[in-house]
Length: 318
Image 1: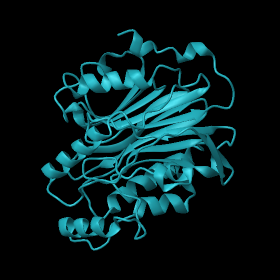
Image 2: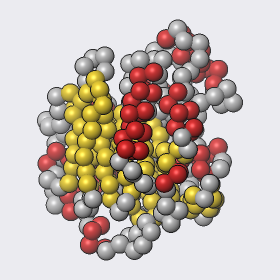
Image 3: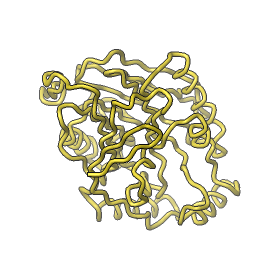
Image 4: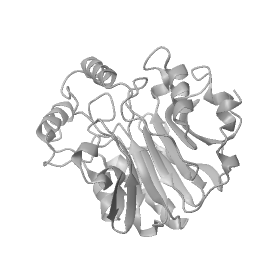
């Protein structure tokens, strides 16, 4: 067990992580995917969360790539979710029935931010949330809706995002994250978790692979520098990258998707965070059934919960 305090935010964690560097970051897409599959397979079952205690809220956010990465992805992802037993699930790039044969049938608390027909962000929970909603921000260059889901449970505000992937300068993503922060401020939200697919790395020239990433990015886009606009914006507003809380580069993920880049993040807004709520753990399990890795975060709540609300009603009833 280790614990640290960062800006009055106490982190208590039990981690046995395995975060290797990507083996290929500068190749065509098919080769990058092949390399990603091999690396995740070699580290199969690493970084899984431990058993969840009753007084812990577990959140899983996962870009599932329309359940299309492998032929049995939908079945395997559903089994994975049952195994890790989260209290809140957000599935990014979720594709509804018939691609999904499991989650769509769960008739419990959920919201679906539809980006295009039957595709978007699905957030669901077996608990009774204070509220569960979706918000649309804009449309992207292929006329998909952009936006987020917002789930509030026990005064924790979980905002799941999927930022723009098309405008390589990052300016569209910056506009989106600005709108999301304005929503947080306007609604006076406390204990905010901002989590999901940011489609942008948080990287500078101190990173051991920075020059390789920069060369790949310049070759592909023509831009000489890797954009870091949204991360800089969030850090200036005192959002905290939760990966960085653990004080050791061994515990910081090196990649989260097929391209060998780390683009899936979790931030906490420190100015309104209740220090009696503890981050216990955060992991990216090496699970190979999508082109992204899932994020699993455990949060120890301020006071004991009623065991009844943690029954896996929507999973066990199927």
